[in-house]
Length: 98
Image (cartoon, rainbow, N blue to C red):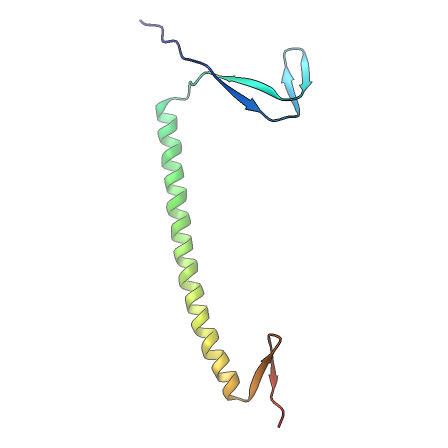
């Protein structure tokens, strides 16, 4: 059985209170990361990321379809109001003066 030595990676952590060997310490620290995340974990995270991306793209497509439909309805409503003798003043419909 071989003993595989991994090269540790140092990661900066943000400023603030952090647990330490003698209680809490304040300041920017360095955390040791040994790279022990398994390939399966990385693949699982990648699959979840792809699922979220697909869900986001599907939602955006639905949102675009609804926005296009609403624009069409708004155009018909605007035409009907203009035909009925109204006009828009600062975004509000008003009856035209006679």
